[in-house]
Image (cartoon, rainbow, N blue to C red; front, side, top):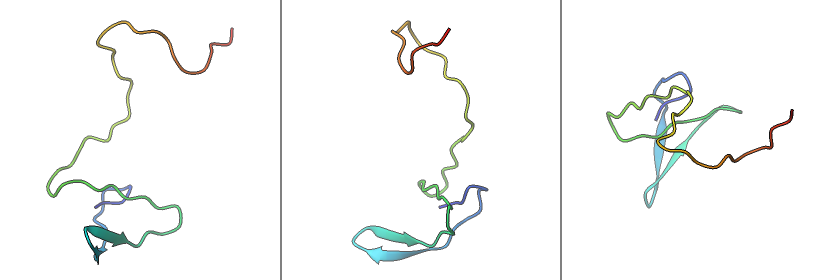
Length: 60
């Protein structure tokens, strides 16, 4: 478990496969398998085929 800056977070076992993480107000945690550090870059995703548009209507 790491915070938004990638620093390890303290946690405790709350039993039955549950953990407890103390976070500051507005804080967030990323929980991954031990040793796994995913790339968290936010970027456009290239489509692998044509698809209908979705989302908010275009305002022109």
